[in-house]
Length: 455
Image (cartoon, rainbow, N blue to C red):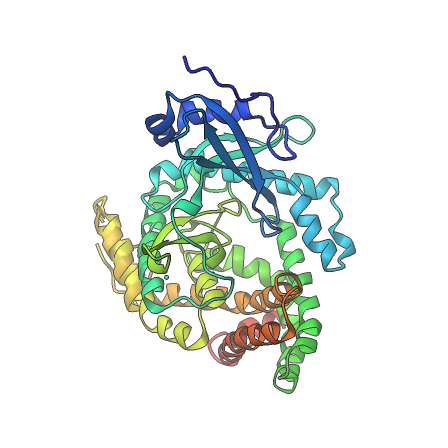
């Protein structure tokens, strides 16, 4: 038996989790640690908070395990502990008096953490997409037990991209392919198609268990409402935005509209639901890097699954494309990715014994078809339904993009020079402008009835 000299009762960071807890988890569950360091004596474990205010519902501790053998490299691993510290700090900096933690907030955050625990223990093992290795989970029981996820150090896998840096076409294809297996963009579409195939095939085990919180609709509506006026003070193009904001403010902040699109629209269209990541954008994707540290087009890991819920197969894709693609990239993507996704999903379903119907939007359909074929099943969506589902989610994401821009400018650029802040604002302003132009066109044509109903 290995004899350690580290103080096993040493608390890690400001949590109640100890060096002994971490070592026990590593030696029981981390195969890489067991292979490289299983017989080595540990002399110390240092824990550094690397959240830097960006993990709004959790503190992330990078734990460095040091060994007695002088030639042994430090081993790094991560503890993700849910709580309100980062959440409150971020909103207090913005002068938001409503950010103070209350009982309701604590229970909401506990629900998010416990949902992520369930995802990693129950769903991650059956999804053949890049997901972090999680070694141990503890549910958060308010007043009784502190929650935690013990997981691999994702900095070894690759890099995230800076918020609102545009994805390119190859990245979009990759993501779309990966989403089709479950649900930068070709790879992601394939992953989603696979994920969707798996969740469609196992609907009985999760249906009516994973909901969007009702309070989310009102919270999002309030964020969007406050963003309209703040954005007009930031932009030099107020003359362009003011008439559109006046036209769409009531519509964009209508809680019933949000509920309809997220919860009812796909039911109304008779589309089988899928498990949705729920916060699917660049900040929750790690990309593989070259030997020189440059970001590639291949996904290393998708993480932060605490917003998992049942919903539209287009929710994750529309979120990603709207928030993470410049206007010219998004418009090009919309020409191909739907067909590709459907093809991938169809291939997956055929593995279970089902046939390809006729679909629209090349890339998405292509990937969905591929995935469905692998299970021998028919693809459950028509092209028209997929396209309409995307357009509905796109409308909401245009206005949440607005709220996100205001928040980013308040929080993440506050310490930068005015020249840098202005350059970043100009960059994302153009993305939002193109998205708003396209939303305006849809709400005056194909989605005119939606605007008339909720505007």
